[in-house]
Image (cartoon, rainbow, N blue to C red):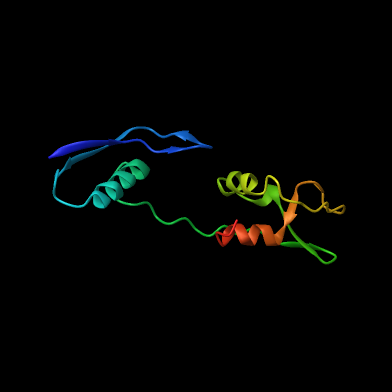
Length: 117
């Protein structure tokens, strides 16, 4: 039996704390089993995966023919990843919105949610 230490690292959020996978049978299973168990321990501290996150619900607004999303209404951590993905995209200026420069086309947001962005 061997103990393995796992530490997850995610660029915008830094390094997580080191967690230990205790008493893993050394040659008992594939390397994929070991990786899956190490990920579970790194995420939760136990050999069980966390619950799947709920889908992010952000209202889509409309101004004339333009459908848009307010960046302030996107919750973290999705907001951080989304802002990184749209860094060089064109964004609308919605004059009647309280924050006219903090809007993004709804199509960009929907593409992000679908994994296409």
